[in-house]
Image 1 (cartoon, rainbow, N blue to C red):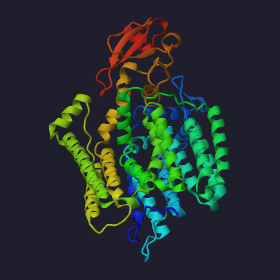
Image 2 (image 1 turned 135 degrees about the horizontal axis):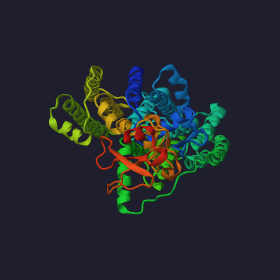
Image 3 (image 1 turned 180 degrees about the vertical axis):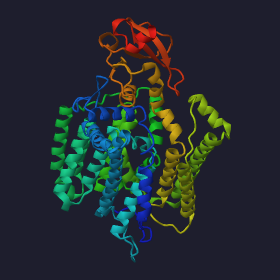
Length: 565
């Protein structure tokens, strides 16, 4: 009989108060939902595709931006387009309408991870050691405490912050991985429901643009079901096999086999990849590694095997495609579940080290955010606002009493949380992840309240679109050959222009205005049939500008001909 490394008393298996858990989830989901434009690059590109689909300017099956085909994810882009089509007639701002379903998807990820951990912790192999005279944790209480810890670990992961709040297909892929994780965690009594959910998860993962990963996850899941020491997993192999076949068919039909190998071949590439892995998965990855060591005698059990392969395969894909953080995002559900199973094995010194680092790092970052905010509002200290003006000349700070109140409230809550955690009588399993998760929530809320306005100014392309309105006017269409898709999306979605971004647009289109991105060596290249008009620079761009040309001859725009007369 294999013993478990978990030693958990009844007092330690207390659950996180539900009101606190719901409040933390709300603080993670809601900031940034309102009051900002889509940010470049992937976020804005995806929004541009969704808006074009909703307005009927492009095909849903083969969408384009500026007449250029886009590698789209039908489920993700169609979901955003449907919300835009339904909500904008009711007066909802289009970017908010597109963002709403993805906030719901992130919330669904949290729920799936919680329930998957709960089910895995209820299995016989995951139970803590039974004490000789009683006093050990009850299975249900133990499972709830670990599930709370997994959710805290998920929210504490640094790499999830920005990517988890975008309107991109990767969030749909993340939900597919979480759904597969939950399906494989369900007990034997839920056999056919678990099988259907596993099929849906694999199919959705493939249709969302990760067909290669779907096939790898399907093959690994089938192998785990076949060889696992947990007999309740054996019947799942047929469902998983059918789901893998369906994922393969959908990948071929929707052309979602897109991964290209880009193996790191230099030492510098490996160093950069190691840095990405370190910060992106902090602080959950070290706990997940600790779980694999402490539970090494139970690698064949479901509560270790299932989250392990769902964490390992996306990490391997991220390595194979050259260090993609978006591929690495899909490893976070598995890593969070593994991190939760490290909690019953943590020593007091390890827990204290996590607390010390969390308080130091998160408090220092929060202090820096407050200093920048104070500098923007009062001019003191002058270094932050001076540096900001050098990067974004013309920016004017915006003061809102509500954002200040939210920032002060979040800071006060953080100070209370630190004091609560440092009380010696706290024994809950999830205590070691409260400060990491709370610190991330604090800084995310401060960034999305105190500094949302300057972040939106620097990370969105709205100032660039506004700067183009005067020199461009309202032509019949804009030719923008070879322009980045995010900029094309901004021109169409935020500027309202019709854009032709094909490579030969300068020669073949009938557009009266041409936009060219300035080259590194500067200058205004001569374009046959076009006359240079003006150079427009994005306020936060130092080196590159957009060159505006107008067509010569009979196709010149009416505004230009009147000016020449």
